[in-house]
Amino acid sequence: MERVYLDLNVITEIIKMYKYYFRPGYGSSKLLIEFFIGTESNSFISDLFAALSELNLEIIDVSELWMNDEILLNIHTEMGELMISKDI
Image (cartoon, rainbow, N blue to C red):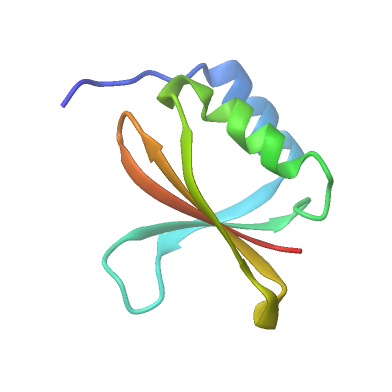
């Protein structure tokens, strides 16, 4: 697998703007990044995509979970697949 290096200046700016936990997912061996401060900002998703842009993100699918007031973004990157869940 090819290594991808992210611009630390961009990542540092995201860290200053948002607070998060990095932990295992619920009942899973997969890792979870849970943002808990700042996500109500209208620019959260675009800021996150900018921070991860060097991974060449490609949105595969967007699902709206109306019963949870949530959207799910399924994303393909050079490093593998990821899912972003955001309350709306």
